[in-house]
Image (tube, rainbow, N blue to C red; front, side, top):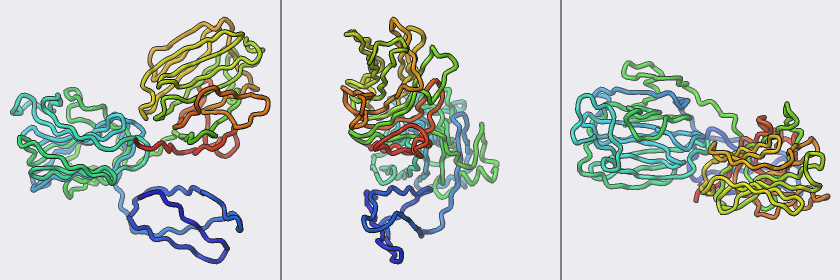
Length: 440
């Protein structure tokens, strides 16, 4: 469905009704007020009408899977159809791996937020009796990629339909038609693994899936319902819940030039006054932008007005501090404008500053004097206010456009919901509790 605004009524008595042209399947509905009625008062009453919706769901923790050994009666031709819905915060993981007695098969996996369909052939021709997995070397598989940014914790619909000469794969509303290799012989599906490859130790498929799968059907067979009923054809490994737990991760979208988040250095009081650390995760398509800026007080071993910036330039992370005409600079990472989530850890210990990206190698520099934040220190994320009296925030770089989450100060998580409720810090032009970055 395209983006659309729905004007409401202008008085307390009239009713405005809209009929959606396309069916919408949703677990939650978010209301985003665009503008207030200039002649009315703030208020809302909303009623939604729809059809009953049946949900069979399974939750996977990254170490669990469902393994089905299907009888010929259940795995019946002609044709092959697999459909499901999933949501996750992980950008990689094996959703499904199916195999026929011939050794041929197919798999669905997430790789860097994209869905891959693998058409797999047995290693070395015919499958021997001991071979449980399928070779996934480049010579024995064909891949089809569809979608992007599918690790956004929203439900995504997937359907694969295999015919004699071609197959259709659909992700949400996008369908791609692909020829089926003549040597591929799926026939009856004998084994089907959900959440992991059939033989992870012998497979080059991605790691196990962590997230939720809903309404998983093989042809007309409800696979999750079979697991709920503890059917003898289903083997459960690890901790599988037949519900979808909601993660605690809250994102914030920095949408434009006026977006910023300001926090106080007193948000987290460290046990040692000589230690200060900050961390965050971000995703963006832009190669440049300010992630964090703060000014050190003179009593923290800094010259008056000493400024520290953490920013992106040419898709690489830079830390820069200027004082008395000298510049301290560190850099880390590369290719960070790929739309994927990247983690940043910054710490000041005594007279050292350390910077790392994606838990990689730490880059360290000596500052000469210890860096220390106080409760009066303001930390600015993403940008600066348009008009800041006292010049507490100065941004000589581009503003950040993208999403941030898991902000930490001295290893303590910043509660962005309290920020949203104006109980903590200050912000402007942020969309909190969602990542609004769009696919390219």
